[in-house]
Image 1: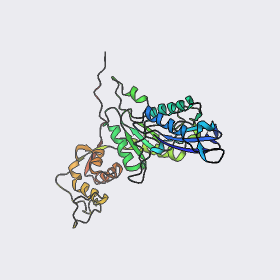
Image 2: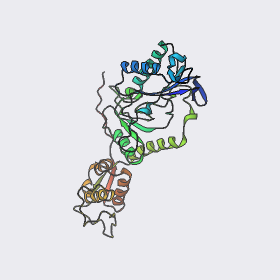
Image 3: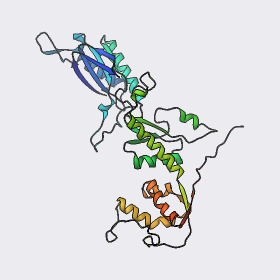
Image 4: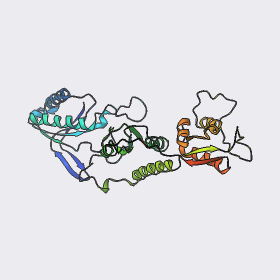
Length: 336
């Protein structure tokens, strides 16, 4: 448990310009609950903070605790204290405890302070998350359905800030209904979370209204969904109308794309140009009706829409026929 204590003459927590907690002289505590924190960590924190001699006595020396001064506490949950910046340039919050457990420990911490006779107020659990944060995609029950693959692919290639979770690893409910035995409709849950799996601070409260919506973030969200639908509607399989190889640079076809320098080694080269070069060397092998565009895109780590656009060149030259690939259906067993 990470705690920052700040002496204050006054402190308050406001939400949408509404004061939800306020104290006069005392301590402002920012608390970050980490994975593995238990009741003993709460006891140690309460003992340390309540007896910390950081207030001045009549001689101006720091010799008094908050118990001695009968000051107040304002305790604010602050998961960002658990951020790890040892690697990379974006903080990692894997050390932050889950919202459900954090909230329980946070409430127990305030209760223990109150048992000592210290006036203790809390902020809003999860405050400052708002609707900002990464787009979080929680998978279906199976985790490898076409809808899972579509969201993962689009997010990986066009959505800057995103994370993936497993089934039911985030706040939700509808997925359990749709995925129930006898129905089993693959269900992917997509949210925007500032923490690992916690929605914005006002979720299901009177602060959950249109005022918190940021148009640019909503547009980013909408683009993700539209691109997934576009992917599903264009995920075709190809059937060639020729045998052998064709010269892509032949003026008759002119469908060759610039690639790497053939005089240089390509071993270990994962550059964009090399990926395209390998695709062009392989693409005619995929014109057998067995692989769809998403299969090819995943295999070569290229954007679905760029691969689909390239395949269209073969269609336009009357080299292949295309047909929309069927969406696989689960075998459902129902009780009569």
